[in-house]
Structure formats: C-alpha cells, structure tokens
Image 1 (cartoon, rainbow, N blue to C red):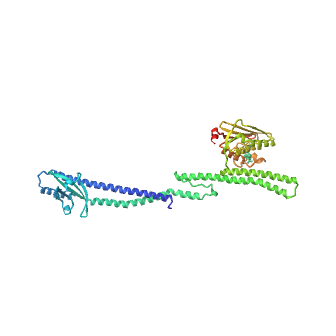
Image 2: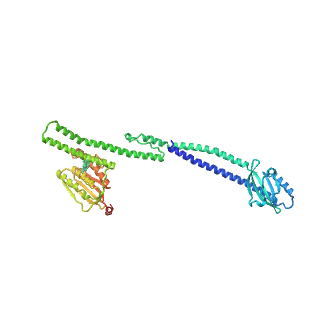
Length: 470
Ligand SMILES: Nc1ncnc2c1ncn2[C@@H]1O[C@H](COP(=O)(O)OP(=O)(O)OP(=O)(O)O)[C@@H](O)[C@H]1O
Ligand SMILES: [Mg+2]
C-alpha cells in the first residue's frame, strides 16, 4: 500500500496542493494587509493636508484661542477626525483632542520630523492606533500636526480573512485529495486487472492474452506490448515443444530398428554371416542416430546461442574443398556425373571454415540424394563483386512450388522425399539456413519438379581493409 503508485501520487498531489494553497493564502493575506494600510495612510495624509490648508491661510486674523476653537469644531465634525494634536517648536500644545489629551501620546517636535512626515503604531487604552505626524508652517512658525486612526477594524478584517483561510484551506485540501485519490484509483484500476490476467498465464495457457483497455493511453499500450511479447513467447514455446516432439519421434525409428535387429539376431543361434549382417545393420542405424543427434545438438545450441561460430577471413573455394571430394565419392557410387568448377579468384569472406564446409556438404548431400542416375550434380563458386556465391545444381526430382517455402523448416520433408529410403530427418536445410544467417548471407532456391534444383548461397566478401583491421 505504502509503495503503491496510487498512494505516492496522492501524497505528491496533497503536498503540492497544500504548498500552493498555503502560498496563495499568505500571498493574498499580505496583499490585503498592505493595501488596507496604504488606504489608511492615504486617509491620514489627506487629513493632515486639510489641516495644513487651514493653517496656512491663517494670517493674523484669528488668535490662537480662536484657532483652537476652529480645530475643536473641525475635529468634532470630521469623520474620525477626533484624534488629532498640534504643538509648536517648543513643545507647547496648540491643540489636543480629548481622547489623546488624557493619555500621554508623545509628539515629535516639528524641526525633528522627517521631511515626508512619520507614521507610527501605538496602543492607547487597549486600542491600537496608527498615527501620522507632519510639519506644518503657520505664520512663519513650524508646528507638528499629528493625526491618528484606530486600526482595530482593519485588524479585525484581516483576522476574519485569516480565519476563513485557516478553515477553507484544509477543507479544500481534503476535498481535492479525496478526488485525486479516487481519480488515480480509477485510472490505475486496469493495472490491477493486467496483474491478475498476467498471473493467470503460465506455460499451460500461453495462448491466453490480456484484456486490452481501449483507453488509448499508456495502459492500452502496455497491454498491447505485453500481448505481443506473449505472442512471441508462445510461438517460441510451441516451436520448442514441436522440436522436442519431432526429435523424439525421429530418434525412435533408428533405435527401434537397432533393438529389433539385435533381438532377432539373438533369438536363435545363427551363422556368422547372419550375425555380421545384423551387426552392420546396427552399425548403419547407429551412424544415422549419431548424425541425427549431432544435427539436433547443433540446432539446440544455435537456439540457446551456445553454438559459437568463430569468424575469421577464409577463402570460400578452399573451405568447401573437402565437401566437394566427399560429394565426388558419393556421386560416383550412385553413378551420377559430378562437376565442380573451381573459383577463378580469391573469395575471402568472414566465416567459420568448419561450418561453411558443413553447409556445402548439406547441399551437395541433398543434390545427390534427390537425384537418380543418370543425372548430374554441379558445384560452382563465383563472385558478384560484393558477395561470394556458391551454387549447387542438380538434375534431380526437384521441389514443388508449394513446398518451397517450407523446406528450410526443421523436420520438413517434401512429399517425394518422405516416402523414399534416401530421406533424412529434414534438418539439413534448417542447419544450412542457420549457418548462412550467421554469415550475414542469403540462401535461395529455384527448382522445377522433375527438372532439378539449384541452391544458391551468397556471403558478403571481405574488403581488403577489413582483413587488415582484423
Ligand atoms: N536438391 C534437392 N532436390 C529435391 N528436393 C530437395 C533438395 N534438397 C532438399 N529437398 C527437399 O527438402 C527437404 C528438406 O531437406 P533437408 O536437407 O532439410 O532434409 P533431408 O535431406 O530430408 O534430411 P537431412 O538433411 O536431415 O538428412 C527434403 O526432404 C527434400 O524433400
Ligand atoms: Mg538433407
């Protein structure tokens, strides 16, 4: 639970939202506070300007007592104008409004006041006040004029706003996080389904697929990708199972023949020549079995990547020499004409000499096996300039066009071959195909049923520079 994506997403979301709301709250509160104070300061300044206008026009007409009287009237009438005091440069009071007079609210002498006036925050009788003092000249004498206003209302408004924020932020957080948790739960629900589906798939039901949510999002792509992977695994698994089944089937025949031959030979005492025949039959079958096991091992190792080809620059014409000699011998025993034209030039390819020899032997073996006397088998080596080409042509039974796509598959044997004694296990061309692939080459076949076949292998030639660097 703690490590689930859903939980972590919710925590992230909650934290981010909390920080945003907190910043928003503090920001708006501070902006509001500043603007309230600015408004208040403007009002205070306006009041002093009013007083200044009044004082500046007093030219000897009124006595100080009359001015004091004017102030009193003014301060009683003006809105909030009751907090107000004036003193001269010696600190003598010209006027003090009643609420301030009873409390010692200090005032700075006019000559000490800064040019722009002075704002101060005070508490008088448990009431918070903001004062503004400025210098005003009257009849050539400097005076300090101080006005004040209560900040209680302003502070109350700020406190109310703060309270609203304190109540609303957690509520908004709660609602939004709940919504977020619910949304992530909904969004990630398909993941649980994918997990359940995937858990139910094993080697027994590899053909089963995951349900794909048609949401067009990552989860759909994930399911599709997993399904594609399952498809590949399924195909590989089926191939391996098929291979094992075919291999056991193929091994059964020679082993059964060996066993019956031995049993028959042992049933009664026999002549030496009978024993010799039985033994040579057994030997022949054993050789066939060994060959088969060898092929199977090659393919099994190639599947697991254990079969390593050691590629080095080799001359194609040279490495197939032995295969040609073996072919010549086989062809002679079968009464076939065998032609091998040597290469006219050096055909250096990056290759594994032994495997290339085996490749040639597989193709020559097929050509001889599927050709009846009188017939011809011809091996040609040439070059296209970029690739070395090995061609093996026979005048044998040929392959039907509909069988051509399958002959490189494991255990595949075309119909005429299956019936005949000559037919092998059907692994030769599969091995040949694998060898060619590992040499980055290509193998193709053209064939006319009854008219013979030509197998053509091309392997890229090594450029002289490549040899030098190797
Ligand atoms: N030169 C050819 N002429 C006619 N048919 C061929 C020729 N080469 C291959 N084929 C057909 O392709 C099939 C597959 O060949 P492949 O060499 O893989 O198997 P195989 O010769 O039957 O057995 P193995 O080579 O394992 O002993 C053969 O059974 C045969 O039907
Ligand atoms: Mg073969």
